[in-house]
Length: 115
Image 1 (cartoon, rainbow, N blue to C red):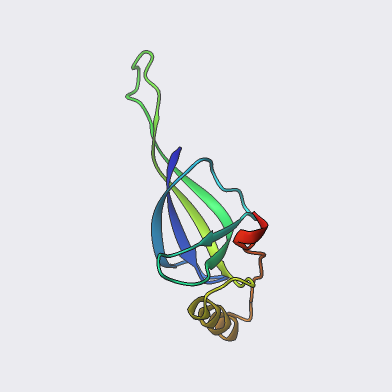
Image 2: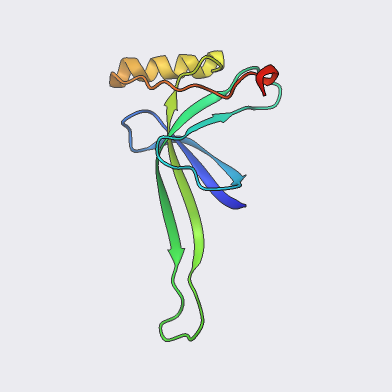
């Protein structure tokens, strides 16, 4: 398991709208779809992974046997629209499309009855 900070970006922008901390079983790769379900909310917030930023701490120079450590892993994701997106997420995606001219699409997780 690995701790990641999920940075949520409007398509084409370089400043995160917000971020969330997660513990994941692996590292998402560029192009992966991520769907976030919130308690008490019907639907998901959907994103496409843009890139990962690895922040590492190097060992002291000359230290025998010491290895560097992971400081933080930031996963940059862009807003995307799916058939399971919440109404609020859908509105945000459409607003970003009006501003940036870009609307990303993904297929969210399958409905529970298909799992």
